[in-house]
Image 1 (cartoon, rainbow, N blue to C red):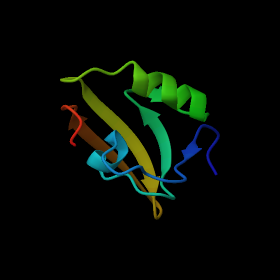
Image 2 (cartoon, rainbow, N blue to C red):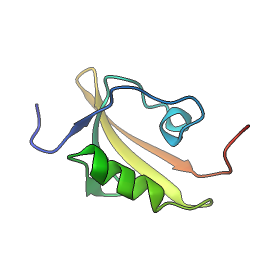
Image 3 (cartoon, rainbow, N blue to C red):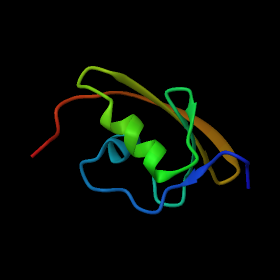
Length: 77
């Protein structure tokens, strides 16, 4: 395992993570350039985001590293 990481345990339907294509079991390395090492760190970053912000996540899945981008829109439903 890498030194700075956060393993995704579940993805809530309609969440930013689901919109980005993040899956349970992915290793979240960074969000908007900030390394993620804890759930509280991740929550703090997510709660600071606003509609229209561009979010970039770097994840590790199946031996490969991926960079995913999404522009936030209003929640569905």
